[in-house]
Structure formats: C-alpha cells, structure tokens
Length: 250
Image (cartoon, rainbow, N blue to C red):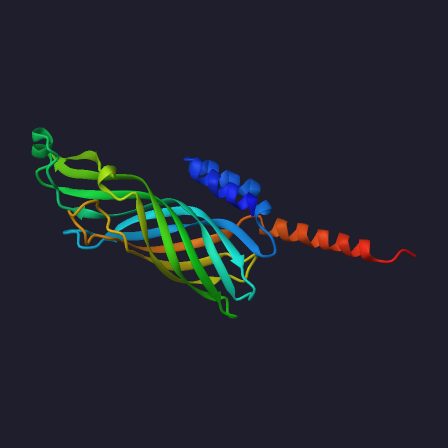
C-alpha cells in the first residue's frame, strides 16, 4: 500500500506524460498483486459545458493510470487512479470583450474554444458479471491545472488566434458523479474497453456570473494492465518455493 501511495504522489509531481508512461512500464509489476491490478488507461473524451450559449462538444484525449482492488467477493472491485491528461471544456463559444480595444477589434467576430485541464481522480465501485461485462458507479474529483480560452478568427485568409488565461475564473476543485459500462477481453491478461459518463456537480465559474454551468463528459477508454503477467509469474514461483519448504525431508 505504501508503494501505491508513493506512486500516486509521483504522478502528481511529474508533468511529462512520457516520463509517467516510462515509470509505469518499469514499476508496473511491483504494483500488481493477486488482489490489486495496476495499468495504463487512455482514450477519447467528448465534453461540453451546460447552459453555455453556443457550446459545442469538445473532443480530446485522456491518459492516466488505474488501480483495481478486488474486494472480498471477486465480482466486486474498487476502482481508482489518476487521469493525468484530462481536458474538458467546449468549442464554439461566442467572443467576448478582452478589455483591449485592439484585441476586441481583431476578434470582433469568430469563436472561442475553452480548454480546461484537470488532474482527475475517480473513486468507483465496479461489478463484474460472469460474461466479463462490468458496470461501475461512483464519484470523480478534479484538481484544476490550467484553463485557457482560445479566440479564433479568419482574417485575409489567415487564422488569427489569441490565448486568454482564465484560470482565476474557474473553481480549482471539480467534483461529480460517474457511471460506466465495459467489457474485459478474455485474451492475455484482460485488457478492458469501456464507456464512462461524468456529470459535474460543482459550478464551473467562480462567483455568481454563471452558477448553472457544469462540466459534462463522455469517456471512451481502454485499460491495459501493466506488469500483471510478470507479477503473476513471481507469485507462482513464490508459492512453489513455499510448498517445497513445507515438504518433509526424506
């Protein structure tokens, strides 16, 4: 358990995703046991913001790590982890004043893409049926990393772009409910594919400006166990060694 806590802390410290993937490949087998499964999780997510005029779905990708803890009943699993790369938001928002006459003139028309980056931590219970289909439900907590409004406008055939940092306008903590369904493949050591929906419950913006705006996102994910085969082999060898020690000497 100490190794798991330390590893999650390291994930929040390192900003480079490639470094995190490398760490998972190196330490993956150390984080697996008969009752714990560790792996890499990633896929696409389709997000939007409720009650935001003109908001269209935003498509991005997500990447992180997961832990599955087997409970007393093998059908019940506690699922958690860290989604290191997770961008929510929306596209097609109307332009607004930047309190700069030159910028306001340059982006008098066009649209705004809102990118909100979080470190997300899901906390869910999974129930796995005998046919390898599973369902899950729980909550998800998000820690804001950065948030940017990207202004777009075409001018003389060129695409003008301006990035406006709006991190101070977004709540640092996001939280909501998650529900999902998936299937565990029978090949190898059980790669998972699934769908998960996030229903945000914390207002997105600070103050009373837009109290009814919330994050919503549909995740399409693939979960790949890392080091599980090596961990299983090590556990089998340890069991064989213990059995040999218990055999009476001739």
